[in-house]
Amino acid sequence: MSIERTLAKSILDASRSFYVVMVTGPRQVGKTTLLQGLQNQERSYVSLDDIDQRLAARNDPAGFLDRLKLPVLIDEVQYAPELFPYIKILVDKEKKPGLFWLTGSQQFLMMKNVSESLAGRVAILDMQGISLAEEEGRPNTSPFIPALETLKERHSKARYIGESDIYYKIWRGSYPQVVTSKENIWQRFYESYITTYIERDVRDYLRVDDLMAFRRFIQLAASRTGQMLNYRDISKEIGLSEPTIKSWFNVLAATGLVVFIQPYFNNFSKRLIKTPKFYFMDTGLCCFLTGWITPDVLLRGAMSGPLLETYGVSEIIKSYIHNGQRPPLFYYADTDKKEVDLLIEQSGQLYPIEIKKAASIYNTKFKGFSFLTQLKTPIGHGCVLSFHKSLTPFNEDVDIVPMSYI
Image (cartoon, rainbow, N blue to C red; front, side):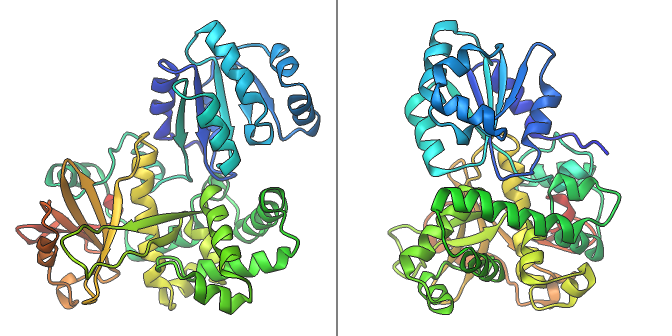
């Protein structure tokens, strides 16, 4: 089963303009598969997952690059940051666009070296698991925003997907190996993924001695997806210091497993909450870590709401990053307990989005987004993502939008 990826166009566009294209993201999201599918026969390939290649690149970066056939795809480049200064020398000499394609799991040290060594020469593109639009055969779908023209475009192309099918996708997750497999490999895949992630990325980067403590931490974090960050509560529950918990959260973010959503605030109101939220980017991983063993149990369970919100947020983020764009996302909360799940900032306007499990929004307490006028920022058309079967106006400023339109 082959699934066309949205990011392909941005990679090819960047490769025509930049000497180096780097695709970052978590392990197993399909970075190498996508790049190998796009490359022509002239591009060579080397993986630094191979320990011999890795040692050669680290011990003699100039000699390693000198022996490569250019253009080249270097996989897992984070293992040899020593290469970056020498890549700079090579591309400045050759001055040919697309000379290097690189992949890497996002890590602080690697991105610091890239920024310092390849500034102005590299296009950095982020990648996550397969999006709903990609799975549905709509890889050319634009980034999601609840503006009327975008909603009409989705209405003409996206099919309705019901609650049980969406919750199956939430439970299953978005890693290509799980999405495309004809067998049920869910348990085996995620157990192996966590083991590999902890034993390789976490141990290598943090040098964590107590790997069981880190696993308890990541399980607890998964149970709190969609919540505001509270380092103190988690540190008390696990019995570790707040700085340790903060550094571990930063590792989850640096390796692409979680994303932080900052609150929207300005100087016009002192009642606005200023604590970021965090979301897991793959809901299947989140379900595995929190013990939801079937989609039916998840649908009826206590985390069905938070995981639906996590799914909606992660899909919206993917609609941006897979189009090569930075997701301009915030959330809103104030001390009067008014909240908005997402605010998309575009062209000086804020577009509000609420995510609800109910099929009928009229039976909920939702009353619209009029309270956002206190922000003194123009408020664009908003939407409520739900299991409603069709695009329906709630009022003149808000539409009810099927979840499958993301």
